[in-house]
Every structure is written in structure tokens, then in C-alpha cells.
Image (cartoon, rainbow, N blue to C red; front, side, top):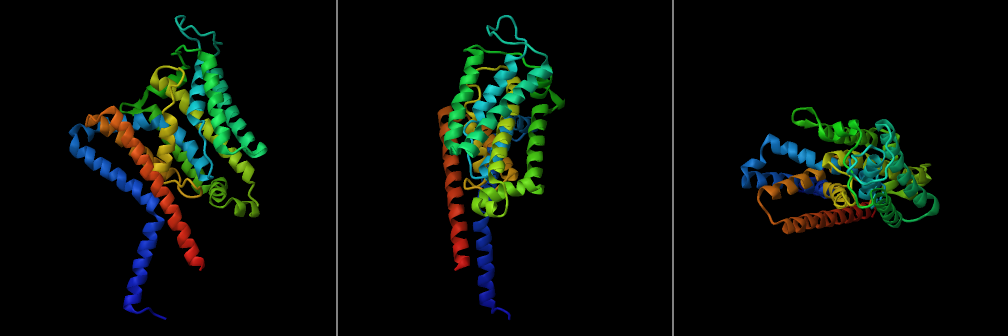
Length: 346
């Protein structure tokens, strides 16, 4: 039975409207990125250069590594507040087991570079495992568990360096953190891109990725379907910690030092990248593609504000406002989706 022209037109309009509502959290970040590119491009000619693009990519690379693991966590409707502290602690563990200059007053344990890297990876793996155990076996909510881990990781970092600054890391980490594959393409950007690519493949094309979305979308339904929800949640917490640990190790080389509180700003940056990009705080919707858009939004914003000489304090305020806007869109999009689902059922 065919629809009348007016009815068909209304149906088409409803279809477009429904599509736009459903894709709101994906469309808004992309439009924001386009607006920022145009605004800063017209405001500062030096913004639209290949060298500046390299700067943006380098500046967001550490955040990208942390946000990669955090995307898994948020997709399961959990949160990890310890990512920056785990990154900091892992970088300091790496420096602690590396021979330092005699001027550095740290009673460390110098070991071969490969062993120092393995111990650093094991340390972030252990911290992620503690998060996973506390959440899945004891039943501590992720917010509280990772808040406690934030303090634990900060304590580990403080205990190892005791207010000092270490500079040396193994040669492999120095190469990956400071050198380039070819001129204009830093290794740290390549590593961040590979981590994002692998995470996208896992989330999109593997059974584990489907389970991550199922757990975030409807945990009870996932359990009834035979998904081991506790194992999935534990896995994403460990993935988050390992990604943060890798970011911490390369970040220490990139920044040129290992010290307390070096990664403090990266918690907000990583959460902002995931949320601003459009991944749902309620779980089950979004992914690495959204995180990449969010990373570019933050990278272009921070870099562009430097080019137009905005007051540094105003820069912080603008970033906060953009995060707030992303949260509002996130919640509003979820509300529209829920309303639409209820209407469809009715």
C-alpha cells in the first residue's frame, strides 16, 4: 500500500529528523572541529601550515594513548579516574630502574633497559589488575575504586622520586618518545596512531569488542546472553592501565623528565577527548572514531588559542565550557534516544 505524497513527505522528514537525533553526538563534535579549523585558519595564517599540523599531532599523542584505553572503559559505562596517575607512576618506575646521572639524588636500582621497560609494563598491569579486582570481585564502584588508585599511584610516584627529577630512560623509549621515523613524522605520533588503529579493529571486528558494546548498552541483557560481564569489565580496566602506562613511558621521554604530578592535566584531557568526541557516558555507543575527533577538537583548540594570543586563564575556561557543552549534548542525545525507543515500543 503506497503512501500519499504528503504522508510520504512527512515520513521522509521524520526519517531525516530521527537520523539527525540519533547521530547528534557524532555530528556535533565534527561540526565543532570544522568551526575551529575555519576560525583559527582565518584568525592566524601560521595556524594553517604543515609544521603546525605536526605540532598538533605531537601535542595530542600522549593524550591519545591514554584516551585509547579510556574509550574501552567508558563504552562499558564505567570510569577510570586513575589513568593520569598510572601514567605518571609507570614513567617514574621506568626511570627508577634506569641508570641516572650522579647529580640526580634518587636511590634507584639501575637495570638493563629491556628489564626496566618490562618492570614498568608489569607495574601498570598490576595497578590495572587491582582496579579490576576491586570492581569485579569486591564490588567497589569504578568511580571510588579508581579514585583510590589515583591516590595509590600518586603515592608510588612520590615515594620513588621523593621530590627529585629523573631524566634518563632506556634508549628504546628515548627513540620512541623523541625521535622521528622520517623528518616530520615523530615516532610518538606513529605509536599513538597504531594504538588507536588496533583499538578500533578490536572494538569493531572482534567478539571482545562486541561484548564491550553489549555490556555498556545493557548489562543485564549481556549477562542473559551468556557474556561474562565481570571478565569484560576487568579486561577494559587492565587495557586502560596498560595504555596509560605506555603513555607514561613515552611521555617521560617526550617531556624530557620524570617527576611528580607531571601528568596531572591528562586526566581531564583524556576524558574530554572521549566525551567531546561523542562516546556516550552511559555506555554502548561511540568508539575510537569518536575519540579521534575529540582529540583533534582539543588539539586544534589548544594550539589555535596559542596562535591568537588568548589569555592562558581564559583558555582554561574555554576548554571547560566546551567540555560542558559536550556533556550536555551527550546527555541530551541519550534522552532523545530513550524517548525514541519508548515511542517506538508504544
